[in-house]
Length: 107
Image (cartoon, rainbow, N blue to C red; front, top):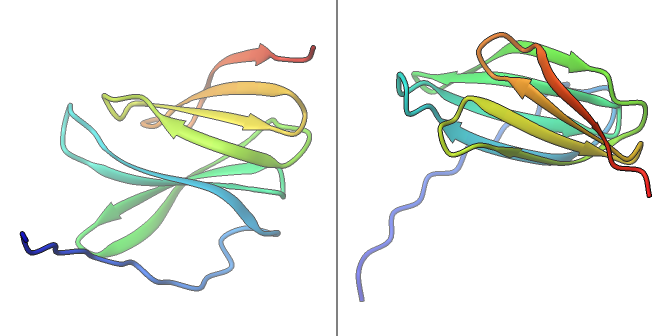
């Protein structure tokens, strides 16, 4: 059986005002930069830079009216998609933290 190597980042921090319900990690195909995305019940998405074993907050993205329940990143590592209890899907630029698109997903 092949040997499996795993790394674990464990940190307790006051990253959000409430619990984190969603997270994602990405590595940009453009420049190799790594980011961790966190989504919270506090209605905010945070984009963190992961460099040399250190986590640094780059952007706090606000715009959802209810808690974030899902985050995902495109394969290129440049766009974050978030979904929240407000039935909105938002697309964010990882490099600027700016909102790219807002999609109403109400039934």
